[in-house]
Image 1 (cartoon, one colour):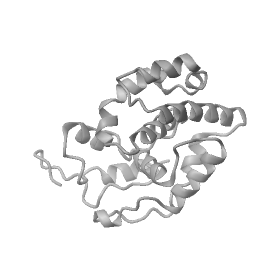
Image 2: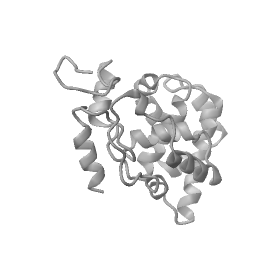
Image 3: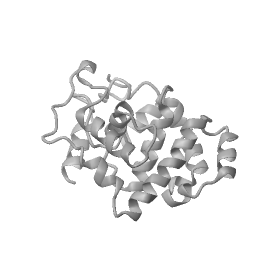
Length: 197
């Protein structure tokens, strides 16, 4: 779609000002640090069954509630923190998703103690060579072999709410794949950032 500013964006990127900002400045740009990846995985899990716009508008609430997504701090959350989170209207108050966010921080902390990194695990699924830019919605998969493998690897390490579809959405958001549409004004810039890694 072409916005009022004359710039071509992915079909969803101009539907609201929140989406435009997220699309132009963040979505698809590489995230290579474990804290940043943990945040994206957590938010994608909370988005399951909801609109991404709901999560995007509550993002600062999530950051405050989950200690800035600092892995060791969230891994240390206890029952009092769980009760606090369940009462926090600034986030999505879903028992299973809150439990998963805490469990995933614990699993990631265990990975760190074992000398593993989430970034290495996620970016190992970077497709090579990169697929051509999607020209239509029909060319965007719900999941891929890479997202299925990532889900498998994370589940084996104790992660929850990390199914193949959720993992593909995370891979898109974090730049592991570049699913900006053909003709989107940021696609080439995003691809250049990916190729520089």
